[in-house]
Amino acid sequence: MDKVEQKTCVLHLLFASLLIASPVCAQEDPLEDLDEYILKSMTEWQVPGLAVAIVKDDSVVLLKGYGVREVGKEQLVDAHTVFALGSTTKAFTAAAVAMLVDERKVSWDDPVIKHLPWFKLPDPWVTQQVTIRDLLAHRVAGDIGHPTGRLSGRPSPDFLTREEVLRRLQFLELGAPRFRNAFVYCNECYMAAAEIVAAVSQMSWGEFVEARMLEPLQMSSTTTSAYDLWDAEDVRPCWVCVLRGRTIGAEDARIENIAMPHVLGEDGPRPIEWLAVEAAGPAGGMNASAHDLVSWLRLLLGTGVYQGNRLLSIAAVNEMHSPQVIRQPPIWYYPIQYRGADFTGHFWAYGFGWAMTDYRGKKVVLHGGGVVGQASSIALMPEQRLGVAVLSNGQSALPMALHFRIFDAYLGAPEEDWSGAIRAGFTYWETQQRAQEERLAAERARVTVPPFPLERCLGTYTHRAYGQVEIVGGDRGLVLRLSDQFNWPVEHVRDDKFRVVFHDGAQSYPEALTFEFDDDGRVTALRLGGPKYERVAPPEQEQQGQGS
Image (tube, rainbow, N blue to C red):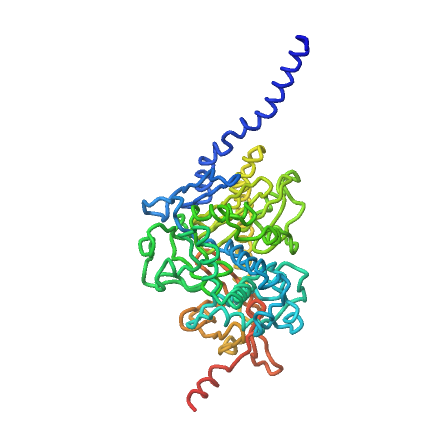
């Protein structure tokens, strides 16, 4: 080889080495500015505390806490601080079913009634046809997810068990026949899946998850119920329940390292009590630390293998992470979608306990979770062997925004302020909501009186699924009462239309309320949102019945 050839060869080798080395140098510390970005974003969203776990190529690259566990107190969030997982719990329930599929004890396409013979939906044909696959993919549709009739957390002196909730589904009024044709989010569907796990395994859902997942994964601080962390009198037992006469703080918990939920008030974030969603536990009741979620991320990125032990088959993981039904993007994602085709947008779908989309040409598998005052999110980019878990003690979309910021860092993509973009989207949405409320308030101010005497509406009404409500008289009009604990004013909107505004401590949920009359002008029923409550008796008849 002559000198020219030698020089050419050396230059080629040098150029090749630079091509190989450049990305390594560029990504030597892809998370260099992440701490600063997280703290800035927490301030903007007013999130008191947050924990992050990042796994790349089966190694932990970040495991850290930020901020405080409770506003006004000094204890800092760290990797071991326990938060509520919310709906990211659904992935654990889907994995529990997958384990039984691996053991050939169930099939994804088994009819639900094969394992729960008592299970009934309003439509007899759907009852016969609905499968485990339909449950886990939210393909049952209908009116199961009605917001004020959340059977799993309905305010009542006698809280329903999981089976009691499911037995009441047959009394719901299904809307348009969309069975298997639409994605309709359904917590009760995951409760049914958990009951199948219990029936087949002869263990409760919680026992199965603990024995088959939490123990092998060494997730020692993870629990399947808020009652594992708190005494019963220290939690809110339903989504609109409020504890009276006591202030609960992190020091009252059964464990030392726990984050308190926070909601935003006029003076910033304030702590509230934990919510226990016991019957709906398989849909949103688990709790964990970022440290524990490292094991969960490693299992999923390892296609079912953790520390050399296979807990799930590759086929099971692939099925959970494969589209089962097309869905609309969640509201927080719109600012990303509208930014341009480079980022996303070819599809949004749902598998089993996981949503999926594409981002910068890569498949993303993710799920968010929200329990009043807390928000979480777990996201995977399987091709990159990259997984991120974010837990927070504030109600915001920050956990989801951080996923995409972290994905950008590892993809070597230009930095995008996804937190700012998503927050701007939420600000716009909240502005629109306030404007609508102001329009309704102005409209109500112009209205004089309803077209019928309100006394006609007083009485007791009942729904076979949601139970009993009362319409009673109040100082400023009608009041909707659920048991002796809950009273909500009934607001007159216009003409014969009313509404009730429920509140969970963080958000308001207005529901339309109308009354139905017979030909003689007597009130026979009320509709709250969609469900119809039949009138039992007007007050005078109830009193006569009690006196006889």
